[in-house]
Length: 161
Length: 237
Image (cartoon, rainbow over all chains, first blue to last red; front, side, top):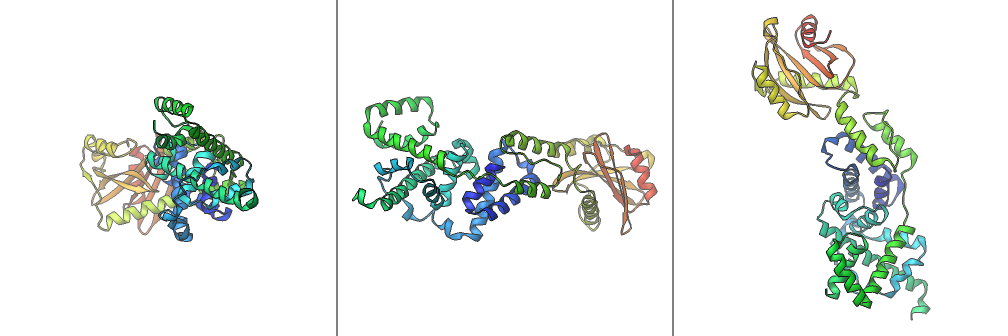
């Protein structure tokens, strides 16, 4: 239940819509519970995730456009030395940076790091091959490292120049 | 192992997703490549920072109550995070096992009436037309998650004509079709318990009762007394 809300909250980026999406998804999950195969959690999260993307499509189409956007290809050396600063990075800035990632990268990061799910479970939830999970996660971390570097530089311009 | 290949595998390594052989290979590469070690260290720091500082949004208590209220089983407790997996699996299994028992009875009556009306108005009443219970029962059992009781009462004036599948409350259910003179009686049956009900609407009569773990709904335009007679044959007092 918390996992469902956490995912929806990260994808919709606000409490009110996350609650609506989760409620709708849970009711649907119970109604179609014969679709359940194997473990309940990935199955349920897949439904919640689907509901989130449906919501994004009609309410935040701009968020979704960014997946195909080549502009999101991270710089080659994105995880340069500055990325280490993630450790000292301010909690608020880190969360903002995750929140700013395109949803397809944000979700794998949330499912992996905050829900501690395996690649296999994540693959099931986002309905993609494990290889896609792996490459999305790698890109998500590079993108995050990239934006950390920008944030760190902005915060301490004199140190770096 | 090439540096670039190793770089790409680092993510899976940090996530504990590499198979043992590849992990050993990567560890050998790490020992030999200081740049790779740096990258590994950064990646671990990044992962640790997200786990430590990333916001985990626990569901507000009100959301659990809202969802519980909108589920077909209002008395189902909303599981909390720790026991969500077993509780979720249990709730789903319980729903499957108990079937339709807890669903709103009047909604169900509406659906049974509607379904009967549709078939009478020209829908296909029977998908398997046979008075032989040894033909009808396996046909139904093969298509449903349960095995409904099937009996012929031709000697008592209620010949078994056949059966079909229908959809009630979003679940497939068995419908046995019995004849009564020129009329037909449809008997919807599924696993579960329900209290006995008698309804009459638009010239149709409806009876529901439970027997031997199965819930029956009979609907027909025959008289209430004849419906009761078939109900008795099927086991409903």
